[in-house]
Length: 278
Image (tube, helix red, strand yellow):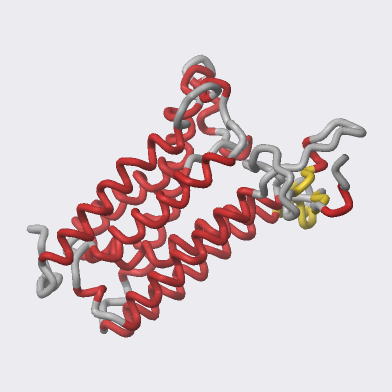
């Protein structure tokens, strides 16, 4: 018989406090905090490199919109099209939940292409190599927000650090699960630390695509592996050898390997200004 006292009972209220009819939730606070910290980090990068800081406001506007829209559309098309195709109005109701990180990644790539073309006039890789550093931190904070919501957790386990997510259980029911939100948050925080080291302590920032490729390899390899102990999110994934999150991670990992190999083979290549024509 399992001694449930040796496991962690989790029943945190996802709401911090109310402001009239609105509620402030941990998820939203952590999400917003990630972007504020990200703004500060990129601002320090721009100062270090003596770049134009007026790009910052537009850069983060592009990033926030791309993350929300891309993540939402990723969830709609990758995980729930059968439902949303019959309920198109629900696509816009982001507050009902449903964001997919792979869609967010694609949204950010597209937004950074637009920002590079119309704002900085720099190589898209120049922008991406910098923004992925704080994005890893944002991802860690978002997974912490998932923990506060008691969502996206793992399959049953007997490991001593298993969590009993009480909000999802029936009265008297006990299911001990992998806290995969913590696994991912720690993995992404480690990626953030590695990227910070590479940017500040090495010349990786001068090798186009190296930081971006490293980000893709580490982030999506971690995601791929953790998915093996994560609870199935959608019914269509039941019985799949690899779930949707794993299949979507593979192209990012392969593209990351390509970027890293390319950067290593061209170590002296420096970013050039005005890649895009006016």
